Image (cartoon, rainbow, N blue to C red; front, side):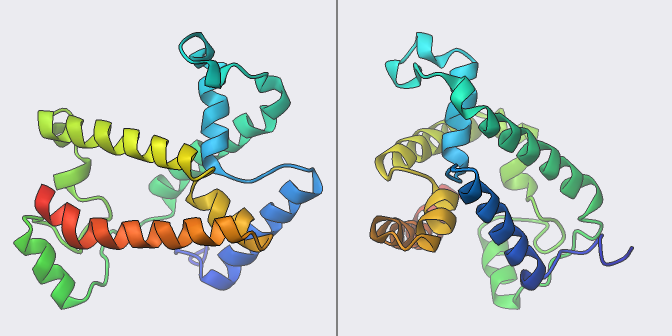
Length: 185
């Protein structure tokens, strides 16, 4: 039972992702979170605002199950599979994060300085969420998919555009980590 409550190693998680991907391929579906959330927006009536969302969501009803599974899986893992919040971080990382203003470094997965309701409801937090959401939404559509779609489906089917997109994701992540996030905090 103790094994179930610990983070699973790559040699279990990786094959489970591969198996899920094989099921998608077998049933002729593409894997990617952004397309599934796009379907959720279509169901919610976004087609009344934008022609982009005027699609028959019933052709992608499997996407709704994916989104529901993401939400339920996230709740289960947050509630039951992360019993220990302590994170073994490099002392240099702890020092740098403390210098940026994070107070509980290494003692929780989701720092209060970013993820608390107080921060999200502040003007700065709201603007960060709004601008980040717009950039992610634009980038996802511009790149023709999200990180999971390109990195898992695209790379496994040897698509060069997906390789380029994943390289871009990593470059963007490095730029955000080293230059943008320190400016924000």
